[in-house]
Image (cartoon, one colour):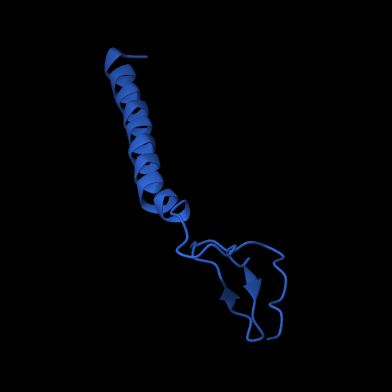
Length: 74
């Protein structure tokens, strides 16, 4: 292994670590603050559920929980 190869591999490894740290900080600031913000009402937040049309209700995150219950009919 040449010194040049070692330097190139180390710089790539360091770049991946820096990218991981920056993206983690971004996600924490962007999404976690919104999720932990206090609710405006004192009532508990409704849980995620699937509506009659198959759409998700009461879920503000970009991912979708698996096996969520159907929404109660009101």
